[in-house]
Structures are given as C-alpha cells and as structure tokens.
Image (tube, rainbow, N blue to C red):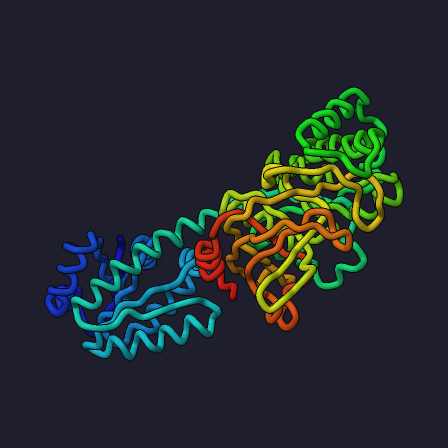
Length: 422
C-alpha cells in the first residue's frame, strides 16, 4: 500500500518523521506501507511521481488544503480520483483534522467521494488495514470500468415507441465509458434474413427442438424463420464486431411475420449480450452483469406484485439459464418463436442500472420460489420471495429489470459507489 503524507511549507520532512514516528512505523510494520512525504515546495515532477497509485493521503499538518487542491487539479489525479474514494488520514495533531475536514468538503463539492480515518495510532492502523482490503476489491472492480472501453453496441432500429424513459445519452456512453454505438438499419437485417442458407437454418431449428422438452404453437416453418433471424443477426454482429446489441423487435414481427426472441436467447448463450425493444438502459444492465459478475441475464417485465412476492416475465431468456425450455409463440402477437424457460429455484440478483447518464441503481437479492405458468403473461415467468411493490410503484427505474443467477448485490453496489452512482 502507498501512503502519501502532506505537510505545510512551515514544517519539514524531518518534523513529520519525528512527530509521527510511531504511527508511520506501525503503518510500515502492520500494513506494509510505502510512505512518501510531500510539501508545497516540491517540484511538479515530484508531485506527479508521489501521487501515482496513492491509496491513502495522510494530512500531517494544517495549511495543506491548497496543496491538496493543486494535486487534485493535476490531470493525473483527476483521472484516478473520479474512479475511487479518496481516503484521508488525520489524527488531529498540528491542525491535521481541521485541514482534512476542509479537504473532504472540497472533494464533495467537486463531485468526488471521500472519507476520513481518525483516531489514535492503533485505531488508525486498524482502519487503514481494513479499508485497504476493501479498496483492493474496489480497485479490482475499476478494471470492469476499463473493460467497457472499446465495447461496441449495435442498435438494430430505434427504441420501441413505448419506451419513453429508457434511453441513454450516447455521447456520455462514448466519453465516460468508451462505448461505441453503431446504428443498424432494420432493412439491412431483413435483406440478410432473405440470404440465409435454408439448410443451416433447418439445422438450428432441429437442434432447438431436440434440446426443448416440447413444442407448442410454432410450426416447423415458424422455427426455421426464427432460426434465419438468428443467423442474420449473428452475421451482422460478426461483421460489425459487436459485443452487445438490442433490437426494435416488433418491427420485425410486422415486416417478416417472425420474431427475434430465439435469436436473442441464442446470442446471449454465445456471449453476445442481446436485449429487446431497443431498451438501452436495460442492455447496459445486462452488459454490466456480464462484465462484472460473469452472468447471462434475463431481461423481464414486472408482472404481478404482492406484499410478499414479485413475478417477472418475458418471451426470451438465455437457454443456459434454464433447467428446461419449451418452444412457444410470441405472447403479444401469437407469431413466430418465443422461449418458455423453467428457471431453477435458487438465489438470484434483481437489478436495474438506469437514467440517461446511468446515474441510478436498484439491486436486491431474492430466492425464486415458483415457475407457475399463466396465459395472461409473457412466456417465461418466475416468482421471487421479495416484495418489490414499494420500489416499483413509487421509485422504479423504468419497466424492464434484469435477473441473474447468484448473490451479486454487494459487488454491484461496490462498483456503483466507486463510480459515484447511488
């Protein structure tokens, strides 16, 4: 761990070493700390070198507030401070706590997260050690932020007309997360569907039937048409080097008398994060689930809310998430192919990352308790032992929410906190 110690120009390095000999010694002995002392008279080059990867900033004296501000305004610190909590150490001697409080307020006013570790030597060392273990995990989470860079998302048509609150700021995605969005005209997809090899589509259709427990509404021709949609979307994803995609799917239903539900299920199985209805906020939630938690995601509509349970459903789900699947038609239209999946009754995380600048988060954990099916809802339906009624009816982040296997709320919250998202 690296501890950067700030002192005023009225004091010297030797003063700091003598005054804080016991604390600095304990930090070295018990936390394996590398100590660097910095004053206002140090050169810009020294400041840059001292600041690199500092895990803690110890305020040794008063009069260090402006020095910290200068460091903060340096480009190197700006890049790192925006992605992590700045942890200050101040035991109170030599007006250090007063300076640390002013610095903490400065951080908050500039939109950054900060905290102060204060107490006697033993308390400080213990809190530093505990905080460093958490910070190490958080910094690992920041590698996820870097993994977004260079991500390419294909937008097959515009968001569906009913998604009036599910868009994102594409410029912000590009500038902050380094994500590129590529517009794909639906006519291009339709043309590709007409060029798909019939034998290849039949093979996909046969494989789907074999791995499913039954086929209900769709005919063989329906399944082949859905397989052609999958192969056409997959080809475009390959040509455009897409990591993720979302589609204005109901236009395909109207124009081609088929659905993209099967295509999205298979693409998610293959590692291309795929969502429907052009919902970019939900697609970003699915992308986060993949990059942070390594999980495929079920994008679903909340459908039944009680004081004890919540049921969500949709017409596409990664086949890999299901114990069994049934080949069905699309719920709203009765056309094409949808997937009815039976999910294992185990622990899940329900989440939504939303807002035009992705500045909102909802996440909770719940246990799936039943897979009961009703003809009044989308094909895959799953009920959880959690009451989401207060959140959904009073504070919801849009309609679609994302379900992933396992308990991941803590790591998701850590990532969001590190990126200033509440």
